[in-house]
Image (cartoon, rainbow, N blue to C red; front, side, top):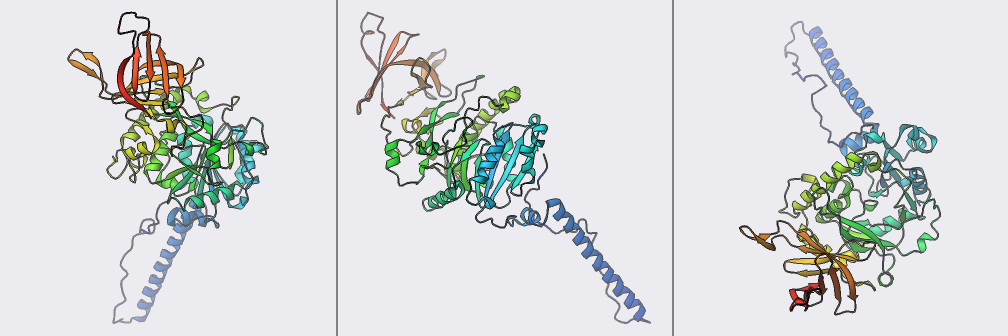
Length: 525
């Protein structure tokens, strides 16, 4: 890939211009003096001329190396390099061997109201023969496209590629982050700017972000898609453990915004969320520098860390309630980075999930740890504040019902059923839906007693799953929802109620095991 100069302040130094020596003044009394004085005057003029030439040559070299006068002023004086920077949008796209890249770029410019105000920063990781073919090579000559190109073998994953995008920013006011497989509604650019301006009346640092609606393969027409209910992000479930690691990583899922919630908002007002989508972001471009992309985040953990870091840095997240772009999710017949780099995928998934834990442990807020510097949590808000806001607890490892539905403000979806039951030492929460039905996990919290040990009670060193339950019956009628579950391995039944959880062993006839016994008092959350 070609290199791009970093923004650094211009400093005028003696280096490269020769050493500055004191210039001797001519004597006040010139014995026979005119010739000598004239010679010294000429020497002074030549020296000054040489300095001017050297400064000009150095400046000319810097300007040339920077890519021209505008680039020079941006890199060294932070003067925007685009003439329409106050209305311009910088679109960051990282693409890996994507057959839909050309169509995405074409549709992006074709559907924009002000295409001349769009500037794309593209990191294209593709085979050279495909990059050199007409479909993609033409973008090298587009005046509004800045390009970094890499062979697939050079790629180090999504975080690495997106961390390069900021180097191509040239002072545009707005930033949009996308994948390389999107369709756009007409005038998407003007609509995005309008929504962000509306949000600035509510919050000083808003971000538009969401899992936008899917478009089917080979679709080019959005006329039917715009009639669908828009999607938003939900906290689906925790990522499954692997290689002995319990990730603090949430598997986010898209879900349509409930119709009754849509009716309650003034169109097209965006709604508050706690979750960050890496495939659709619209924000002031200052975000690129305040929350810089972490190149060590591979894929899993990327969105979690960006959401946490942005929110603790004072940004408020909102999902749009109107369509702006559409996204292709599955892409079953296309090569993914992990297909070509299975060992990198394995190693960096482990390191990324560990790094997410490290990021969470920096705590955020004014007293937060500086261990990870610019890649740690922000200093405006704390992790505890985020947990209260989002309904997610990274220490106890629970996801609240409102987070599961993506409804942070607590408005009840019409078919909402409780998905978290909490007591003082642990909790029960819904796991990933399996083919055979609904599965719940029983967790013990860090510090809770697990049972007798050699030297006293054995306690949990971290929150962990102690059993799994299959749901057999559910009463969803509020205010007394009940959940009946069985653990077939132990021949045990569990009943979760608003007052407490009760268990029994139905296959044992002796009393009291055949009767319900209170395990703990608790509540739905």
